[in-house]
Length: 212
Image 1 (cartoon, rainbow, N blue to C red):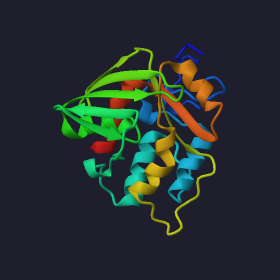
Image 2: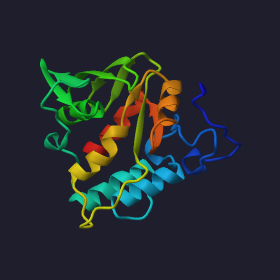
Image 3: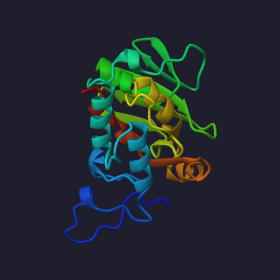
């Protein structure tokens, strides 16, 4: 698919529109935090937290904070890697390597300074970006998108209180960048996970909410 807009009826509020078969894996140009997630992702994200399904990313962020101590993500919570990885961010001349490319976006939001980002899609395509705090992100290629998801078989925490590490372990493998929407859809069909995707240039909206 190449059209990133869903079918919109006259007078319909997209923020409350039920997902349909052509749009439920794509969060388009409406505020992504308020867009209803597909039902399987709602259920899996809720199960991860030992809670009821969460309908939107905004609700997910609020639920994570309630279940993991109430605060926003900090630099120490980022999924740093001690070895070479395909995902890194460069801030003020220092390179930070991560297990998940999105942590480089979060690094820029936390530092409130520009971060140069490099990552690779699951098929090995190199994607580069430059994040500017929570105000914007430019990408190469311009068609780049990123996914958000969780394993279909995720189990709730045994003690009922998930940590940030628990959340990262379940979500991180499914937060990936892709050169375009079609590449995401091919990958999504090959993994046992509930996922959605959105334009990579809009990634700072989610980062702002996670770090606020």
